Image 1 (cartoon, one colour):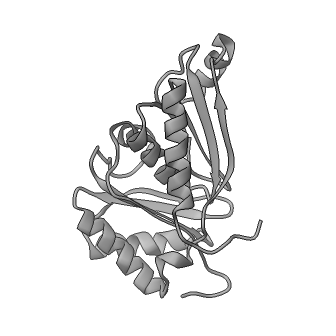
Image 2 (image 1 turned 45 degrees about the horizontal axis):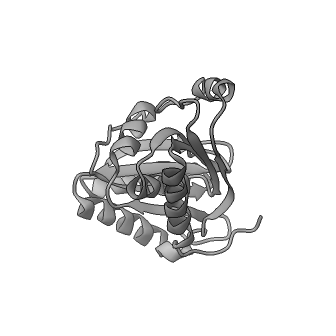
Image 3 (image 1 turned 180 degrees about the vertical axis):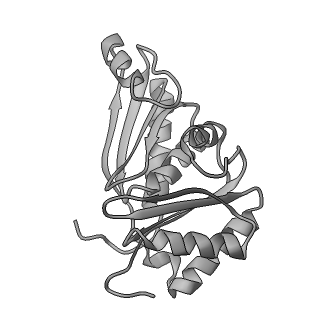
Length: 211
């Protein structure tokens, strides 16, 4: 299956979904609802229509449940999850086996932007709160805005950031060319969250993407 036309863009395993991250995913998913503590796997490919076949393989071969199956202009992405880590790992193994690929053949994520905004102004907080799907941004808090590519890696970054710091999850967008997340909290916690997210993304192996 590894051809010049096909690209494994993201292969991202989350060993344990954190409370806020799992709750946020539950507000946007159109598939099976995940809960805190579940393992999860995100796969992004091109061309996008390949996701339909890959989801079929994953759910027929294991007890993992599909939470997302999305095709947009350029790429396709799917997510499966389970309370049993072994089921999610097996789903990923089977999918990669059918594609004749290894996890290291995915694209290595890169961070396009990581900004920390301290003492958020009340007017900016109001503007941002109109677009968030998670917690409210309170004036005076510190906010992290992180953008990475490929987009689906932002889920891993967000989950690892929540592991590493006491923050509030405001919003996550993982479809398109870039993934984005907004987090808020104290300045010290946001710095810790940023460091956790950056370390997680930089620690993933993969091939360099042509930009």
